[in-house]
Length: 437
Image 1: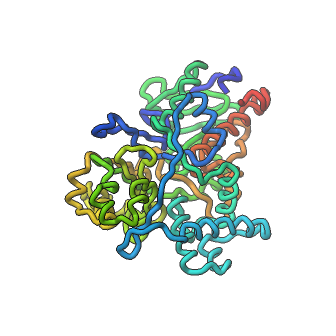
Image 2: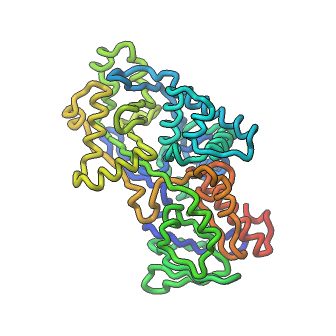
Image 3: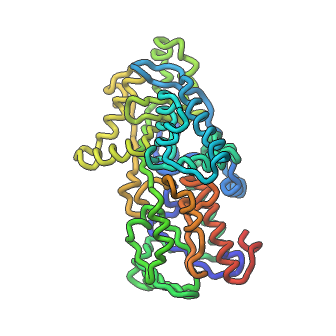
């Protein structure tokens, strides 16, 4: 909008830009400073919204590659067909929606309705809860089908890292904004929005100059924050908030462990597990479904001795409650080391001696996010569409939860929704669609 000649100011409640993109840099012996992602980590597929920024900033990326292992029934082994089965179930959803476009039900009900076998159903449900941070008995089958179709269009199964850290992407956006003279006001949380058609007054936390005036405002509060009502509206955009309440905010617990070396490639381990030696050398993902965390990935093909554990959905909520009530700040680390110890048959004490740092962030407790990312329950497929409709040509809502193309819970979905809101603002200002680019 700034490039279209509009006067724009950006309010950011945090002391940094990026929101749920949150890159920390840790010192790793032999590698210097290494980016550790505490929030969004992967570029999923080839969405133009992200790759345009990557190319503009000449950012180096690397595509994830390597082997996958599973630890099941006290045995580390090559991943079996259950992961392919989960993919097949999700692909089947697309056919179901084509045949029954007006139908919806929870994913749990769909698995029963479709007659999916117990093993395949469990694998698919575990995948959905982990990947979508969703409750299988709440998330809608129609939303999953739409998401699967959207992912297929951008080759969403391919995963990429920004080598210098994901936060380079919003920093490139900030650079472009500053070149246009757009102010970015950090530590400026919006407390209350008072509006009427063609006029908006936003009260912020700033001690001086705490109220901003504008003709229009784009509201990008995360769904979890919007649902708390911590930012007031006068008058309330009742219809929009009703549709926001139909959505759900998922929970994620993740932990990144930094070691002195890639212990899973240790010569002794490779010797004792010679049948898995090649897989261990190129280990990318490991699944430990009977333990916590249940999903792990390394930095492969990068050489850094970093491994990340992940739990999503109801299991993550349960874990977060346990962590908050335990009074033990190292409980997540202890459990993670216990899982790695079991999977690799290495003592916890040895792993602790190799550990140089560990990193985690509680997004559900974070007052500026109140959750990881959104998903659409059964019956709420149209909620994002409804939230994308401008309110009296004055209030516009953006964020990954308002994406209308099936890319909920993604950075590119958030960017796409922002571009959509910008076009709406310009159209209502009488400037025209083309200027939004």
